[in-house]
Length: 189
View (cartoon, rainbow, N blue to C red):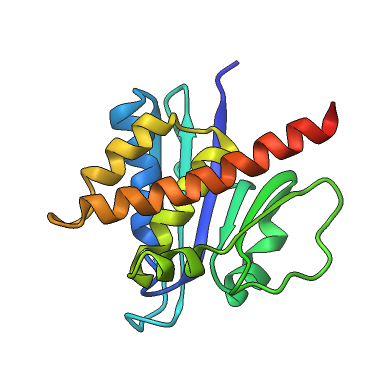
């Protein structure tokens, strides 16, 4: 049976939500040789309004490009968390920027992972790369797309001259996520 993963990336305009979705789809389709679709929605304002991108990654052709129920929800703002949490599947994975999202009680069965993406981006000197920190974190936590495919997608998607900074941001998020995965695996032994 083909593996399909439905992903919703959410936040507010100016956080790079659409770029993050684009990178996931590009990593999966161009560099992993799988199938991917992406749709997006955002408010009429360029910055500060609610924004989301929906990505489907599959081993087989995708016949319906819209999310039914998200397997993964990335929430990079409080409004996004509040709005899209109900659309996360019963055994879904929730990734949040812990500095921007104050979580209430999440439904049983949902796996929650927190990352200080904005803080990490600020430590790297450019808050604007928080979406790439989140991309690395997503890659480590979910394993939906191979890390080398995602790194290549980041490198070929960001503006010329910013590749090194963006790859540092990716690595920072990836390492943080990998530590969480390894810590969780060690606690189960």
